[in-house]
Image (cartoon, rainbow, N blue to C red; front, side, top):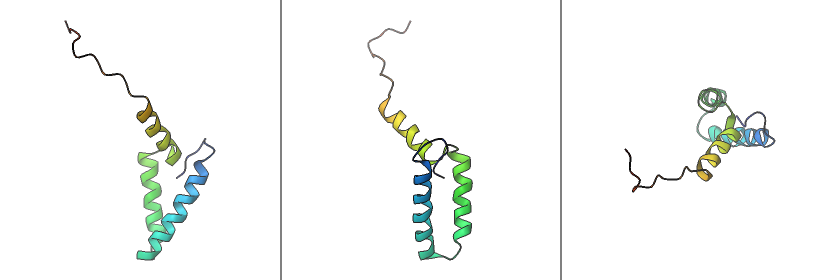
Length: 75
């Protein structure tokens, strides 16, 4: 869940799983089912894990493409 290839990935992953375990046990006893669903969703939608997702969001946030000048002629 944390992400492979980064130093903080395993730290993020273990923190996420610990918090998720504590939250799930407050509502249901099916911790393994919910954890499995979370694993599947992470593999499908964030293959680089949480650290990769943070890196992607940081890159999108800080490297915005400059807006084109409206007064430029498009011929």
